[in-house]
Length: 138
Image 1: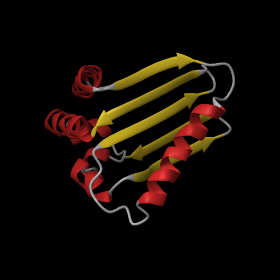
Image 2 (image 1 turned 30 degrees about the horizontal axis):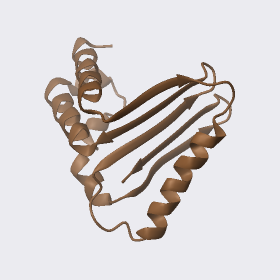
Image 3 (image 1 turned 180 degrees about the vertical axis):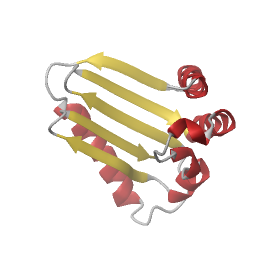
Image 4 (image 1 turned 180 degrees about the horizontal axis):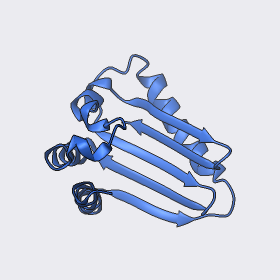
């Protein structure tokens, strides 16, 4: 990993810890059905109240479960922090650091996330890796 990428990652972590109103990492035995069910209910409630995704989102929610380690990570982060992190990354990461891989910084705009509006952003359920990810905006 290039030093610029590593430094940017460390800055993003520092921002997350200082400006993140909610961050928790816990160890669980087995798949945390209740946590994911609650998150899916929150997402469904957002969709029911706002089916057209009108308005701007203000927060990003992440719920990640790594079945191999049993780690459950929950983060609620203001989109302002995401914007700062992307701006810092764009200023410090050289596109050559990705060596032919897709550079997400060239295709990602936090302002576009805001305009996308509240609702589900990403859901990944990888049964082979026993990894599950939910990312949504509110």
